[in-house]
Image 1 (cartoon, helix red, strand yellow):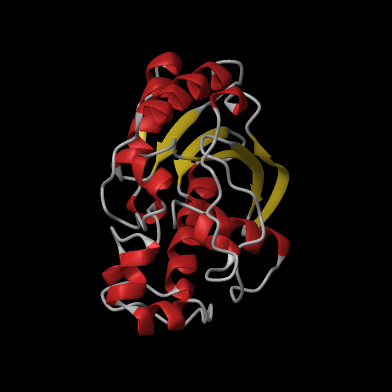
Image 2 (cartoon, helix red, strand yellow):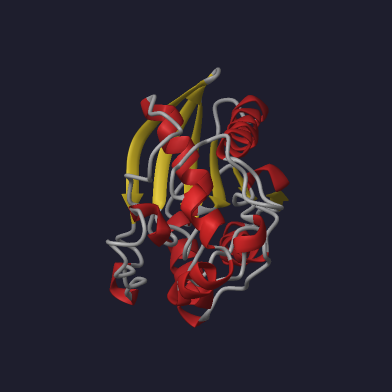
Length: 225
């Protein structure tokens, strides 16, 4: 058994602007950097054996204070990256509706085999994220690993742990810098606790997007995803 503490990266300006970040290398904003410091303080109270993160800047910046506080090297893992959203990356909703209305309508259908032009479909995204998580479990038996990743990746892990389908919008809360505790036993992933953000709650959070009539709940995920 391996215990994983999975963490969504800290806040970015694109989270506030509700832009699709995907695999664009967006840095943390001031609140995101503060969340990363709080995360380091929280993890310092845990017996952490190793630290890993996505290779994107916002995940690396979130992990950096914890690496310094815990005196651990950070294993950078491309498989933990956010989903690639192709032509939608870098765009806010009003820009998407102007430039890519057809692609937006297709994406909102939540077909796991649909890939945006230049992007990655959910089925492939799910496969690479779960492979990365299971590999961490196999590499670190009987250890506790802190892992900084992205909202979309955490959604894939949540669905897998609960046996939920890949179709449909996100249903779980995934706060910036929140802790999600899981155990990996062989190829089984089990949730212990989810969305614990008590250590950063007083710093505030991204205001949910008022798009109930236009967009499914998962538009609120990684600012959007």
